Image (cartoon, rainbow, N blue to C red; front, top):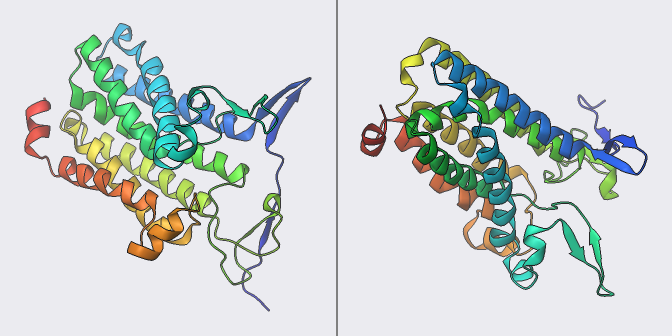
Length: 282
């Protein structure tokens, strides 16, 4: 008798129907994640005596930076051959049909690495406008970021996307939406749990060592924990694009792992208080 039983995973991707309007779980998870980050950073700003006037534009900068970066990251890093010949589809949630028409698809393709870069650029612009110390802003955002990352991966789970490899046992999730009858690793759930743990750890460290805000410590902790975990969890995930199979055969790593390495290096550098962090910090 097996110790574990597989879970038949077959949720409705739509969370709410209102007439012709459909609210999908993925979109809802994104909204919840951004709302959690907004609330956390709002509390941090208040505790640190940063004015409401300087906090107000932060959400808009983050939202645009994350969405634009995640979208362009997917298009240029995972499917450049297609999107460079269909550039309008990078920016609009549409897809060209075989008969030459268009259909609305939503933004089917968002890359976390691109979202991270987009967020960093947006925060740099935000700092230029508000004159708040850059490392303080990065540290505050970094404390909240794992909560958002957790929600996004739960959205991926509800969509039955970014799936893990077959487990070869009775343990795992059977993704019925993919027309399968065998168990896979619920890699999205692994990541969601890990990111939630990182979020709790960040909050606990903050309340014990508030003086580290503005040094780059929390920024480094966020990048290091998330992308180190991302690097290793990729070993039990299917590649996102077919061409990555050749990369895996050649070097043993996929695109997500290669893109994680620079963030891990930056994270460790910041975590250890590198010279540039000390120069830019408070």
